[in-house]
Image 1 (spheres, rainbow, N blue to C red):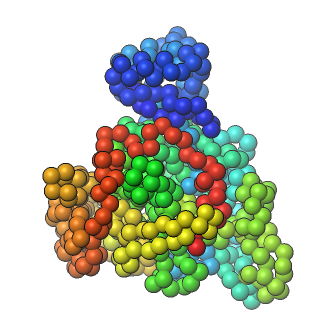
Image 2 (cartoon, rainbow, N blue to C red):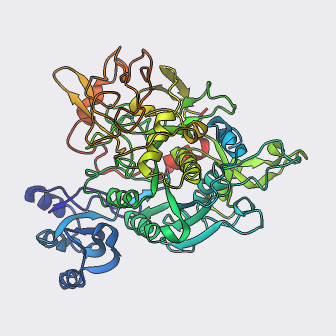
Image 3 (tube, helix red, strand yellow):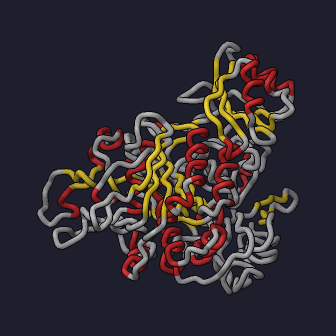
Length: 571
């Protein structure tokens, strides 16, 4: 049984659990107050039983929540009892109940969502579970009869199901806002989501400060699976995350998203906003957050739509987290979508709206009466949290068109049809600090490319197997990075995700054609043209990225930095 290094709850205390090895376990336990209490997620080898809970109670543990989805339960325990708990042969893994945090007028047309809407694709009949900070009532979330399309709400964080933070409301609008308050002759700009008639399942896991725990999210995923047939839940959006502390194969949060995927629900996750992090010399590589590090889910990075309808002038947001994932080296993100300075729904009583009133849209920006007051309906936020719902909304459109699609086929179609024309590099100046950041357009930055909703809707390919993202490996002798297909079927064994080198100044992905499930996934010509997949630089951070532990150690997410990024975005 292993106990992993990680964060505790809140803003918070330092590491509670520890990787296997009695010496390290003893050392880390000695560093903590043995009388302190912590919440931990205990994963059992089989389903947790009343007998397990009784045995835990005898050791002084208090049962807080059952998480049957991952054969686990949350207990409040004393630090002094952790070592004793680790000796239970029925326990597979113990981890802290860690903190998670929440990472269109131009954006929708940019990804060809407007064309989809004009051709009758609006998400009708599809349920999208928004696991976030809550969703409040809004005109743009009603149907044509005035009925609210939030068909189910449940609170896992405490304090009700409305959005007290201002994040979930914004995400919900990107997915399913129908522009009731910005469409018509009185308006010059329209803010419509990708699936403006989809139903929303509101599962609130983040509190008024945008913070929650692993167990909140797992419980919400468990509820979404249970309600799948009731509300036709086909998509889950997770615009949240935390650092990676262990392999996705034993992380309870990753195990939960895999259960949803296997239940037939497309899971879309934000990549994270740590792409500028060079604290260990990786230039932001290796910073994908959990559960976006899981190979099954669709992990989304953020582009800048540059306030134009054209895709040709769009650039990657320098803060968008880059792969490969820490520890497992999964090739992520899977694709990118607009996420910078996105206009969507506002919750007037939320933390964001009250603390940053200048991010509310001026009425004169979108109303013909040129009123100088700030909008009560719309607000601007930035981050991969805003990019993820772009893809979640598009997934709803694909499932509206063909309800028989599997999550793997949805993922494969989105990735195959994504636009793959990018510059080699781009440079941006942070609007707050003035610091320059250079981005390189490689598979660990932009994945399979830039979301194209209309192209995905017109694709007819079918995935007969798993579309799990592949693994990147580094050959220290040759200095080459290879992509290895760890699964069968979709990616094929020779083309893009094959075994040929993708590192260097002239390497490309490959040239095979994906015409059905038996051949490779990408197009008939080299995916990235003649430019390097990663480029000729970047070797300096390899020791950190390809090490055996997570590159972030035990540091917590900087909430202040995240708020600044969400509010300011970048130019």
